[in-house]
Length: 172
Image (cartoon, rainbow, N blue to C red):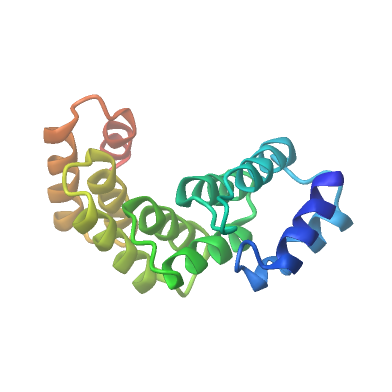
């Protein structure tokens, strides 16, 4: 768990400017069987490697760490990183898309936030079929069928190979 010690140091020197990351490290220390731990460790190292001479970190490396947390079912940890990126003026469609998925799948009372982030991801990247597709799936799950179908139609017009959209339509 050497990387956990490095992350603790990283947090203490303020290179990240992520004071809330302390909450991420403790579950690692307590649970050695964290899902996706190898990928998370690899992403932590990438964040450390991405530091510039002013101890600023690249958006992509932090986003990739957040995505590794998400893929490892550590949604709160992913959310902490993503919200901190937004607070530090990093406006990126990927951040909003991942937050929308976190709020949609794992937060019963955060559907409004999920929808807000879906819309923001589309606003920031209107050419992405996946953003429209994800929003369509969300709308379908909220029983907003007409809106869902419209979003899925846009998604398929941009990329007719999105299998998950056909699967969702087949389940409808």
